[in-house]
Amino acid sequence: MSTTSAVKMDDEQLRSRIRETVAATIRPNAERTDREGVFPKENLQALADEGWNSLLIPQDYDGLGLDYTAFAIAAEEIGRGCPSTSLIYVMHVGAAQTIVYYGTEEQKRRWLKPVRRGAIGTHSMSEKATGGHTWFNLSEAERDGENYVLDLEKSFTTSGGQADFYILQTRTPGAEQPSDLSYFIVDGSDPGISAGPWEALGVRGNQSGPLKLHNVKVPRKDLIWEENRAAEIALNGIDPLYLLGIGSAWIGVAEEALELAVSHARRTVHRDFDRSLADYQVIRHQLARVKIAISALKPWQRELAAKFTQYEAQGTPLGELWYEGTEFKIHATEVANQAAGVALDVTGGYGYKKGPIERIYRDVRAGLALTPSNNLARELVGKQLVGLPAELWSPGGD
Image (cartoon, rainbow, N blue to C red; front, side, top):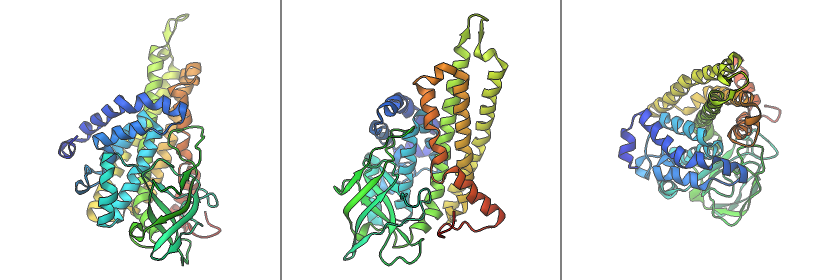
């Protein structure tokens, strides 16, 4: 696909084109990705071949230069085809945008141009000692002259061992406050990087296991912006983008669950009564509740994506959208879990067997735990609502 043709497409044309990629490659690979726990390289290359993995990257760096509505549509449609791939995709877009927003010109050309050909990026933040409080790291880089050496371990890193580059967050020597965190671009081919196994209930293809770095040397030219600015970068740009992406992906998962349930209800006939499942009122009501919940999310998704585009154009920090993005992520992931539960209930034993509904039921649970987990996220939203500090960097905080 040419950049020009992508820019000229309206939202529905864009959705149609992405669905073609999902139908041709991503959905057919979903069962194998889950069953074998394999990283979906073919899916990601198919997205790269059409430009979707470079969707937000400016055209100067071989991207499509599209807006956040396009990103939300892409995350949603990929989520319909394969939740594992959608999580990888959202983390990749966030990593690339970190460089777009805050990288030097040299960093942008060196790391972003290969993305159009299939290079994959991701974020590496969480540590075992601080759990889901990904903004609070205890690891620290060492100095090697003007450069850095990383000897540390991250607990969960999407695309671990598979990414071409990591946006890795850690402390730097001399950091005085818990919020004094720095971002480094780490070359995924470094021999000192090793990834632990990812053996999970669902989203088994996204390889979100532990990541160890041993004597990994990072040149100063791959420090993003400057030392002790990672927290500011995350809260004012990347975290809100991630929340929009995850919420949109899980809308897609919910839509796929509902479509499978409706299809099963319409085609399954009880010959003893000569009635399909769709003839039962209780079945129709369950499906209707899910449809209404999804329909209520879609205008919010579009409005939130439009705000991202508007804020960026105006130079307004995207951090202004953090709380709304958090609320959106909470609600979208919980609607998706409702949809998967109804799909399993409606399809009974057929849905319970190994297959797409059983897989989605497992995959969808990940949304509740994804950072910030919904329990933690509700607490942060609640504190903001009543005027209490979030206390993100206080030893006794949430």
